Figure (cartoon, one colour):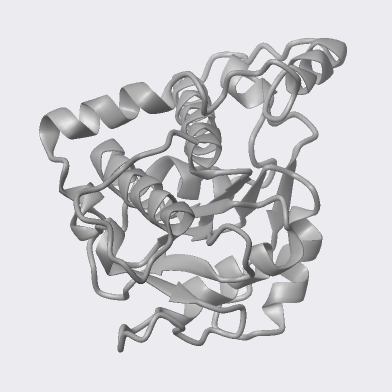
Length: 254
């Protein structure tokens, strides 16, 4: 993860947590710029290094309002533990606490309701291995059946079961979820998943026959993807994304 140093780091927040806060705030801004938001009803979370706590946006804040300083630190039971009186969205807590509680490799979790993601989640066959972007998810994506608004704590068991060890999951009739080792990797996974969804919908819209790569090629490509040795996902593009943000508005660092 790129180490970012914000202006006047609060004395009561350690450097590791602050760097995570800045990266997470940057991710919120990038998701906003990409057009993947749904007013204030989706979330991105990041584990506070060395703890079971995680950071989440305060309910009611738009993604382009999120800053390192207004992220909320909560525990796996949904208690706000940073001394603030911030309000947390129940569905956001249920989904993100499920993944952080079960997957210690998940440093960052992103859940979206993008148009392309929702459309793919409505298709019986879900994501098809058509584009190179989609190939990265071949055999590496989970599916979770829709149960209504994610307000019941017992749904966490099924969310964890259906995600398994995968880097991504399609929440049927709902949206997308990705889990990365850190914020840059999670953003990269989401980018590739979004592009895969968009490309599939565009291809299907033509009505022409679809060309599926051979299964062995799909397996090979998936093995070259996220988490594989030497894979650059999250490392190479993240500094460029931060430079883009800084040119536009660097208030996410505050």
